[in-house]
Image (cartoon, rainbow, N blue to C red; front, side, top):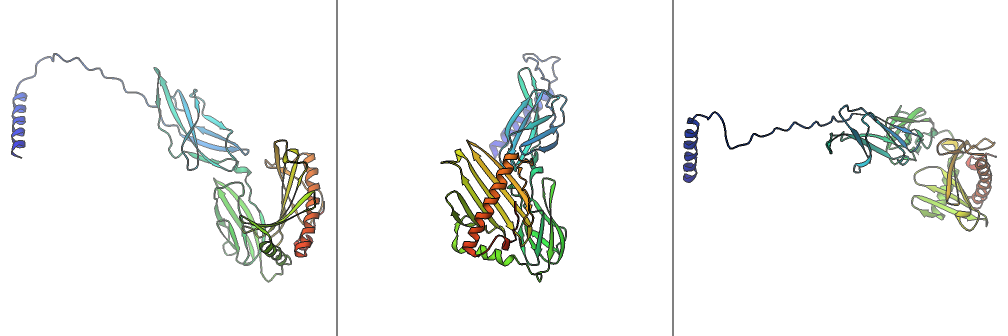
Length: 369
């Protein structure tokens, strides 16, 4: 400490002497320092909108930055790192169309502006949170839009084409509640169950009836499901039995996620799927709804297509199939679908009779093509 005080005293004495000497009129021996002009950093682009088009297109818009030379667009799926998508060398271009997203996946976008001057690039900051949207949001559909339940019954409502979880809400919790998509019927009446995702709301109208009302189908469905769980093969959350007649394969399927039953048939035209393969799945749940849901998958020569149809299982007539983009399927696909439905209803009807001594009509399905 004594040595440090001695040093401090010497420094102070030196300063007193220096400050007592007047400054010279000019300073020699030191070259004047040049002051560089501050570099202009472009403003951060404001993200205006991100809209979905079709199933696989997202359109991003941002505001123009007047001093910018161009922009760099970044994208990331939820929870992942930013990836460079494109550099735009036009300061007046403020839109970017991305045709590479996967249907049902949420993507986040952001934009940086840049100035290119004297061979150097100066970058702006960017919106770190970004702007997000689910590809094909407007094409998503609930697995049911109308339901009839008895008090005490449950039903699992879901958006099957996305892994993202919507916000669920009931318009009247005294009639029906919803938790994570699981609907519970409380009292007789009508309630609307909504699922909101990325600003879009999907609605299912639920009609609840008193449990004292006899439902002639619920016991039959329970009988089929109990048989499958006891005698069938377990595959994940599914139980199934399968039969074949040498040409077609027939399947009865149930799972832990839904109350209904799936009937299925498939057909291989040659030695492999390359020669032609078709499969149809019919989901029925008459204790809850008379709307049957059909999906058909066809493939051959390294190509495939998927179609869907929904119908009142108590009616009759030609089924109408639609592609996943909502467009009506072509004539040949319509004919194949209606023919395959006849095969399915006949073959699975025989399997039901053989296994649980029930007919399709006893499960509520009387539809004829």
